[in-house]
Image 1 (cartoon, rainbow, N blue to C red):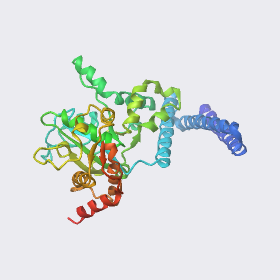
Image 2 (image 1 turned 90 degrees about the horizontal axis):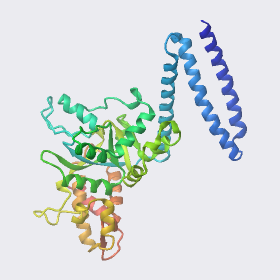
Image 3 (image 1 turned 90 degrees about the vertical axis):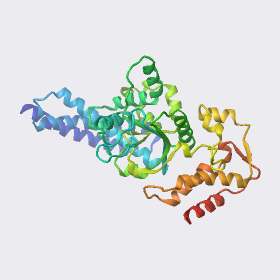
Image 4 (image 1 turned 180 degrees about the vertical axis):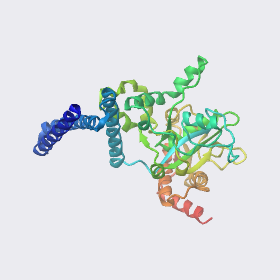
Length: 390
């Protein structure tokens, strides 16, 4: 009983301290750099007071027989996740994600494809390694996230470690394979905000796909990812939050990983990307030059064969292929027709068209040079008009 009384008294003092903080905030509003420093201090004190008040509430509610240290620790972790969610939501509001985001997918990697025991169809989910393992183990597609990091005993510091491993997953698993060790399975799944990057990575995965695997470019509607309840995080924003407090251990993410994330415009989802957000999946074979359809391609063979997107840009910066406007229109039309074929689920067509104008309106970025410099937007509108008329 004495402990309860002490906790209630402490809660009163917390409320009194909160009133003082409110006064400080009001008095320093808009008054010099010093005011900004006080605001940061107030924010930190608020977090401490909030944590202490919650601990007092837990104990005064009758949990004083429990491990108070553990209660405080769990409350601290919950407070960190609230700060994390608030920061990421603020970033998404200030700089909304693009309407569409991309993934270079290779179905059947890292686990062989299998027929769903219920539907009898080959499973083609867009899943993290760990989620794919669970599907393979139960021989059935799992359409929802099995959990979120904040739902388990994970901390924000644990998420930092997961991101650090994710950004260097290829190198880590190459070393493990060399040592004949099991593959390291992660809960994050990559997406890219760069159409160029995702398309080239699709080519890399397509060229190295083995029997039973299917590589292709997946395009997702970001608004539908959000509507599904799955979190879409920009790695750039994650890194900013991780640096906000040394206790998160952001130094585990090295400079190489940060550069890679920046170049690829890396985004991640936890556990899986929902199929309900899928706009289009274009297999690798339909993206590249085929001798039986010599005029039905957009990507240069140099682009497909390049070791990296940076390698393509450097090696062919001064060797752009010269095309007439009609030739470029024909090549763009070939890929736009494929991108819009049986688009699902129903998406905003105008938004999708606007995005494609951005993807293809700069011929130089694909190492093409036109014999004249026309306004390309009307060209796209004509192409889409023909497609819609079908």
